[in-house]
Length: 112
Image (cartoon, rainbow, N blue to C red; front, top):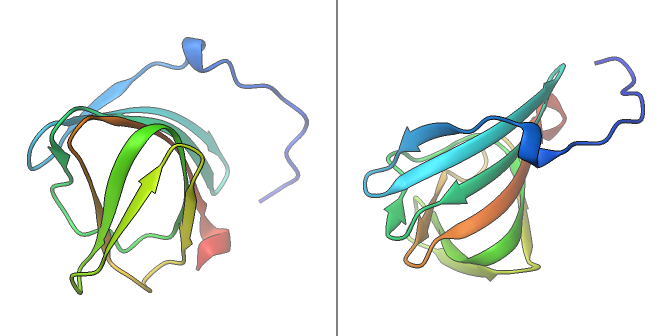
């Protein structure tokens, strides 16, 4: 990836895409800069991801709270101001929320 020049992101100008969960919906606003992906993601109430994700992420909770469940059964509760990080192919995980949550998610080749 080449150097990224200084820039600002006005999330109000980034369109949303809808993604269905096992239950609930996710709304993604995505910026792609080479192999770096930056997303502001909102999960609706009663959202459960429809798959186990193997991709690495840096996930920061902007509003609300959620559970990051690992495929091995471990569960981690995160709330506003908390962050988790995981590399690709290390811990399959999925998100669950009862009240809804807003996240900033960063991923890319640097997490391999």
